[in-house]
Amino acid sequence: MSKWIISVLLLIELGLVTFALFYLSFCHPDAVPVALKNILLSILFGGLGGTIYCLRGVYLNACVRKKWDSDWAPWYLIRPFLSLALGGISYLLIKSGLLFLNANQGELHQLGIWLLAFLAGLNVDKTLSKIESIGQSVWGIEPSKQSEKHEGKNG
Image (cartoon, rainbow, N blue to C red; front, side, top):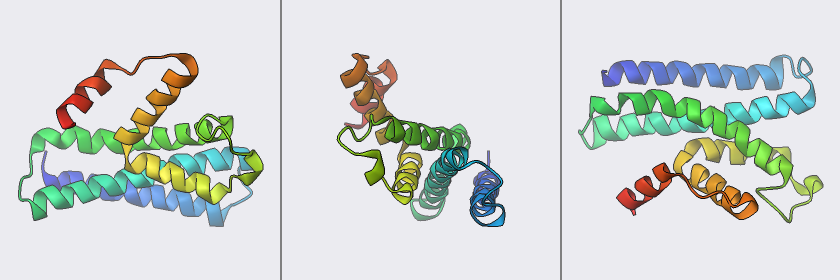
């Protein structure tokens, strides 16, 4: 798949996520209950982070490094959706107290939660690694085999 098609699709997603963020925040702020609105905004901020990361990847690989490889097209198309999911999951981890075990819920400002959702979407690999470490420490769940293979390749 062409870098241009991927770029256009990512820009469309960026536009949709930005529009949804703006709409939920400013156009009809009371249309959705606050609890649902906060998780929706976290999901969208995660998607914003992932889409920006992918657009940056297209720019770096196609323009700066001149090493565009169309075999990576599925990654560019799937990753923003993973980022949407991780934005929502990060919200759940924070609100459940699993991400910040010593934090009082009153101390957590909503803007900080949205920022962490953005960062979760921006850096999917580190977020998944953190989720797996929480799973291991809280429930004794071992990291997935995919994580071990991925870490061995890059580390």
